[in-house]
Amino acid sequence: MAQILLVEDDPEIRRALIRALTTLGHAVSSASTAMDALQQTIDGQPDLVILDLGLPDVDGREALRMLRSISAVPVIVATARDDEALMVELLDRGADDYLVKPFGAAQLDARIRAVLRRTAGDGQDAPTALVVGELRLDPATREASLAGTPLELTPREFDLLSYLAARPGTVVTKRELLAQVWRLPFREADKTVDVHLSWLRRKLGESAAQPRYLHTIRGVGVKLTAPGP
Image (tube, rainbow, N blue to C red; front, top):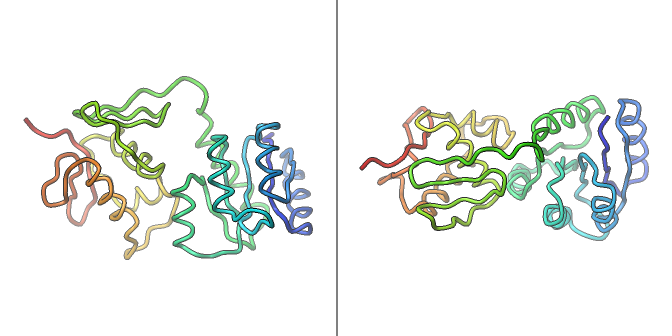
């Protein structure tokens, strides 16, 4: 049984979701404001937070930032805003999933179980640091460095680089990266992966024309390898 914190200001939606999630076997507490949610996260340490964006006191994006500053609790954003740019922004800010209203209780329950499976290992044995050439990533502390110099990475940049570093020399498709790193369906015109790879290249001191670590395989995907001598 998971302890769920539902952050939703609409009383009818809140009651309906509490009833449905309780029937499905979850223990559910609720908050109608961001400030109340932050306090309950500190006091109750829930297993997962379901966060609505339309809160009366703080914008949902700011609420997510504040949540992330105090806790690594998994967060599913549940909102009526069907906006892909907003979805990408919130996933980059640390949300674990994004669900557009209206949705059924069964779908929400499946998303909850999927997120909890992905995060089940957190807090257990510290994962091994990933080292490729002079690039080092520590999943436990989420710190990265190149030749001993710290890299300032966004959460999504770290996730993307870690996914590739865990598969050195392996060509990974954009479809796989969108599915595994962003939890998004693949779209042919989607530039999300390309944009983040471009940002990573700048931080690694390279370019697409002169790659050192990140190599694009045209028409296939990208791979991370240590530079040659």
